[in-house]
Length: 468
Image 1 (cartoon, rainbow, N blue to C red):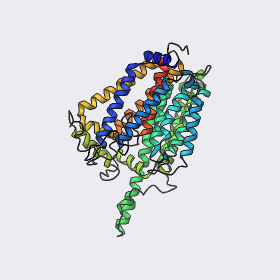
Image 2 (cartoon, rainbow, N blue to C red):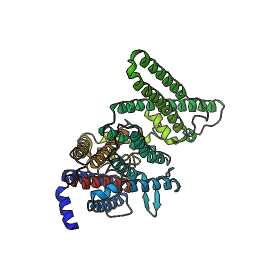
Image 3 (cartoon, rainbow, N blue to C red):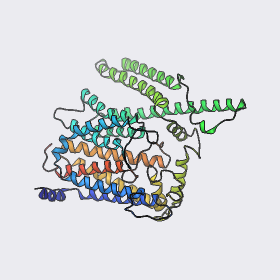
Image 4 (cartoon, one colour):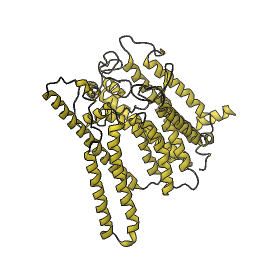
């Protein structure tokens, strides 16, 4: 029966989606290889090398993907909450693991490291799809919105506490899934304004930090003491400092009061009961959001995160310090010009010259851009866009609500990763450590992304057999 099931799966599988996935994986592996080689070009099968490890992780991902294809769709659906619970447990447990690079994000077993945050995305996609596809659950209900909020905020908070704020932000991508399932467009509007308020709040905190640090430095220099530049990033706003973000929160309160007056005098009486709660909750959310960002800037974000924000806002240059990666990556991409230097011909983004730090992880796009140039970068973007569009096509042809929601979750997560990673490499977004799917080196990342793809392939193969 398993052989027959395998044949049916292969016949019904979306081969275009599979081909695009394999194409991205091969492109990614070649880029990891070229960015990791040094003076000697080693074997692809060498476990000692980064590209060798990536190759074996891809094989593991393909094997696991094959096993997923042999599973029943109902088994995947019924296991959603169990997978979510296990991942939440792992996210709690990893907080007690030894720190690696300043974060409690990995389980280390010999030479293996596993990052449960990468699997939290899969778990949330499954759990969200299972919950919203339950009979009687409607996104319009307040209780449903709160349950979805709790489902997403739990892993997000645990990941931020590691601290890994970049991966935590990925969970915001589920807002697109909620919108497709009937969430009011006002929520997207609220999200847009939240983004603006968030950027303003971080800018205020960054500006105040730079201003205070500069004042302290001038005081040290004026006193005749020797200033140690290495301690510059350790300077921050003193505890209890009254930030301008408190003033911003007060301004939001005034806007809320103004909104209440507008509703009272310019809205018909029968509609006022609907608008009053909206104004009140929006105002409270804005105030709490500003204060939470202000608190997180001082207590959650590390010195390197704060410095990256300062560089992003143009408040600090630091070409030889925290801003080194960005400037080096831009020079590597620019050196590729139109057609690139050719495979293994990169001089700025490989392991030989180490011109770009993290050139095989977060900044791997600069390796591709240097070797393939503008045209090659256009090809990469085109393939990735085709991959995302195919995921949306798969989502829209489903009878099963569960599969549709999961498919949109996959597309949203991939889109968020793709846009933020490219944005931070070319200087349009802060460097927050988000990998480029199927390209950035990392076993947990390639495994997590691949599991999402193969689960979607398996569920889609049953689309004609499932009524809901």
